[in-house]
Amino acid sequence: MTTAAPHLRWRSGYIAANAQPMEHGRQAPWPGIFIALATSAALLLAGINLWLVVAVALVWAGSLFLVTSAPPARVTAPRKGPFNQATVAQLIEHSATPLLMTENNRVTIANDAARKVLGSHIVGQDVRVAFRHPEAIALMLADEPGSALIRNLGRRKDIWQMNRQIIDDRFAVIELINQTAEAQVSAAHTDFVANASHELRTPLASIIGYVETLTDDDASVPPATRKKFLRTILAESIRLQSLVSDLMSLSRVEAEKHDEPGQRVELKKLVLASSFDAAGEARQSRIEFQCPTDINVLGDTKQLEQLVRNLVDNALNYGDPSENVTVSLHKDDNGYASLMVQDRSEGIPPEHIPHLTRRFYRTDPGRSRASGGTGLGLAIVKHIVERHRGRLDITSEVGQGTLVTVRIPELADNADDVP
Ligand code: ATP
Ligand code: MG
Image 1 (tube, rainbow, N blue to C red):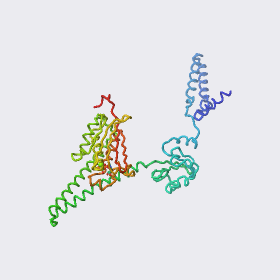
Image 2 (image 1 turned 90 degrees about the vertical axis):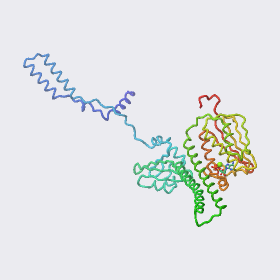
Image 3 (image 1 turned 180 degrees about the vertical axis):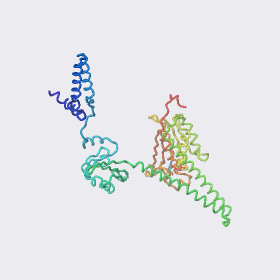
Image 4 (image 1 turned 60 degrees about the vertical axis):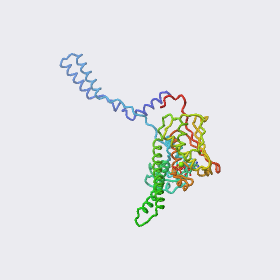
């Protein structure tokens, strides 16, 4: 008895909603049976064989039962209990999006991601206390659903899009979408365009100014001054050219960032050739090599040449002109090829070091521009290193000099399938 009862209850819970009871769904067809019996009696009286009359009556009554029987009961899905706050809290707890639920403008549920952003103390708090942000509070207290962009919520500089959906006059759901990264990318893009335009405009303005003077019939320019102007025009044009070519290199390297390079590169040969290339004849004697063994890496030859040229050029430009620059290449213990470029100079003050790989960043803009620098060299180096799954470290000691180290995973000697 005790085992049967739950089964019966289960059946009624699952089927009773649609199944009809016998007395409604399958009533006996009495009028039809009565007609069948009357007809059989008439047939008997007419002298028809008894067994034949009985057979006709049975078939008639049976077909009446079939026609009037109810359709089979449909089995429906179980009716589950209504959602409550505990099940909603469980459902949203591990969502990566911060989600909250409010009841009469009091936070009743905040999932794990929301508690990380706003703190666990917000559960139970009034939304005005929980958010403490005028735009967020205005959104919470509005009669309509809506969204707002909220700055400095949680951490400083964070930007969140807050969406509020109203369920009924008591409950509302709030969703937070982090827009910080997108805002940073967009700000970086705007900065880059502004900086690039400025860098291009400066030499252009200078070229236009000198050309205007030289072409002005009224201004009689003495031959020596004329030559000086022309030399400046040439220098500024070369600067423009190298700026455009650096910008193109940077965008190419950035575009290929996720494309792992696949050429076997003999690093020793490449480092020697590119260092001499960067130094030119006039400065070659200042380079000291320490490259005992050859090392192969998987790389992009052109980009690695550019990397070496940029680093050696910096060391020669910003290092003491009477001092040598040491370029060394060796295998480190962790399976990396380690390239080091060391100069002797007054060094770089520590506050500049974290910014050196930013585009157009210069510690001494006047000096860099005077030497034809565009401020893009180390930004290009950083992207090349990233593409080669390597590491870039810059250390500098004021009064001593700067050491730039690039580590790139070494290619195993037995990697035969690499071109
Ligand atoms: P270019 O694009 O022509 O290389 P640049 O040399 O000015 O121009 P980066 O190579 O990116 O640009 O260098 C950025 C800045 O970092 C330089 O302007 C310079 O101020 C500083 N810097 C780079 N290397 C050194 C170094 N070895 N010693 C001292 N300062 C350096
Ligand atoms: Mg440089």
